[in-house]
Image (cartoon, rainbow, N blue to C red):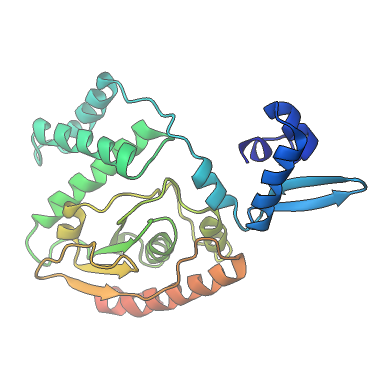
Length: 278
């Protein structure tokens, strides 16, 4: 599967696979047929030859399965620099020791729970900064600052990302929007980015994040999407559960329907946040 995905044109012949793997062709053919029967591969006859490629509807799933945790542990000096930079940013709000603790905990959560393997230093900095901002927001008196909305789903790679992107797009900085996952994936699904791009909604550099206590405490509204009772409950927050189909593995046409359903729910949510939008 890895050889096929990383080949020059995204497809390979069984004979070439067998030669590269130094296995007998009947052995490779048997396994390729099994993958094809499971819908993970597509076949393209070309005369007497048959090319195999990753199924277009399964690319995200296969990418997740093949993703190896090859990211080396960050050197202590890198984490120390991130902590120093964020201590400067949050000077007067948090002690340097608090910032360093959040940076190191955020790194561990991304590297282990969320299985993030790319851009780990910069994502650690973003995740820690977001959590510290949430912690600061939770300490503000009621009614101060923009309304805080937290979207939570299982992998934080589909439904919650779509909802957050649409709310940010409609409300701008009048609403603070965060997302999290009870079992986060390692990347936002490419089909989600495509579905949002079709309606002019950017997703920026968003990435799946583990669900942490601080972002729940900061939220005025917590909206869950299929993650059960994973989200802790605190008094004074408004909790909503949006029953939505998980877009993982679905074709683009169905993802568009889920996207449009989410957009309608977000537009209905806006007036309840005291945010005016046309």
